[in-house]
Length: 67
Image 1 (tube, helix red, strand yellow):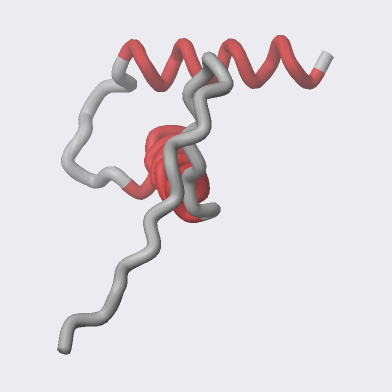
Image 2 (tube, rainbow, N blue to C red):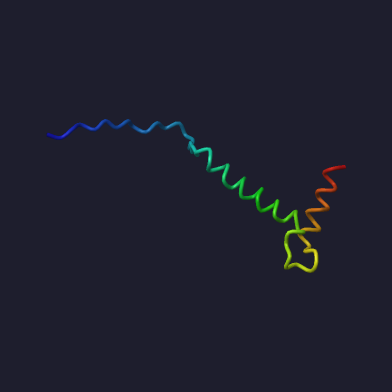
């Protein structure tokens, strides 16, 4: 004896709705902030002998934002 399946017809509103879980946005943001934090603290990088250009650029942007 087979059970009857109930399917709803698709609603055509003319637009596409995409629902993402909360972590689909939170995880990339956390990863970006973590990598940015690692770049902003070059004193922990013992293998570098010279300040990279990206560190100088980020420090300059940080100075401009604090003014």
